[in-house]
Length: 161
Image 1: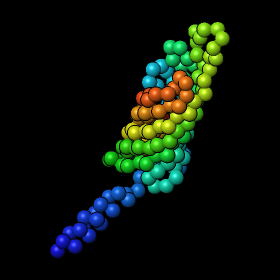
Image 2: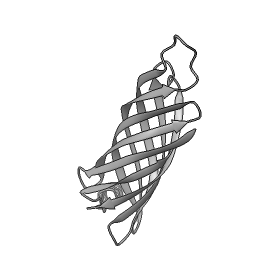
Image 3: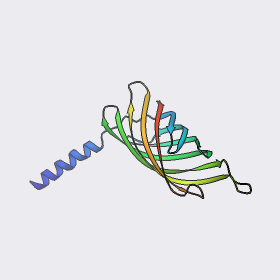
Image 4: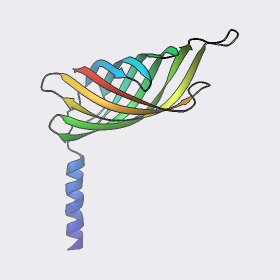
């Protein structure tokens, strides 16, 4: 009896986890937000399977004392909540370069840095080829200026094709 119950639980869990998701082959749009200023990114997603994808973001950043750009790559897993609602989580990293304002003479006013990132969020896929997403992306930077933990929160809108 225990074996039958164990097999039934494993079967139900397997069928629940292998439920096909509504992941577009491609999606492109903008991602707006940042942790301490305003950032806009061109965001591209490429579906790799039924429940995973690759996201690439190239963006400009602006803060109180800096301007710069960031290139981010993330591998994401996607799970269906209900209907067009999905939640996702991922990991990746990237490279960025910042130029600083109000720097004393004789000091370098720019920096290039590397970072690792996590990603968690929620998205809604409309019946038309439109996707809205809200995500939080903690980033751990490696550089003179960006050598700490930063939380990037953003809203994205993408065209799915």
